[in-house]
Length: 175
Image (cartoon, rainbow, N blue to C red):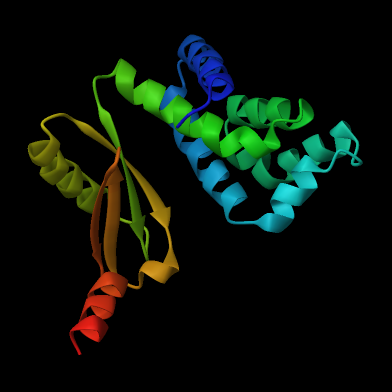
C-alpha cells in the first residue's frame, strides 16, 4: 500500500514534470534509479546515512546520474536525498509512475526479465496485456537475472509468472 507521504510527493513530481513537459523520460529514469537503489544495500546506506553531509549525498547522486540523466531527474533525486527521503524513493517513484499512468488512462505492468526487452517485444507484450486487462498498459522492465528466462509480469495484484525459474520449480515438484 502506498503511503500518504509517497502519494503527496508523487503528486508534486507529477506537477513538476508536466510543467517541464518531460515526464516520460523522467518517469523512466526515476523508475530505473529506484530499482537500482532497491538492489544495492551499499547505495541505500550511503544515501540514507545521516552522518554524511547532505552535500556529499547529493554529490553521490550527481556522480551516479551525471550527464546521462535529465536535469529534472537529478534534481528530484537530489531533493529527496537531501531531505532524508532516500529510503522512500522506491515507494515515491512507484506512486509517481502510477499517477502518470492514471492520467493517461493506462495501467502499469512491471515486467521482470533476465534480459532487456526490445521495443518490439515490449509493444507485443503491451498488446497482449491490453487484450487481457481491457486497458492500455505501460510496460516497466526490470532486468533480473534470477528469472533465468521468460518473464514475470505484475499488474496491480495480478502476477503472471512465465519464468524459466518457475517452470524448473514445477518440474522439481512433479518429480
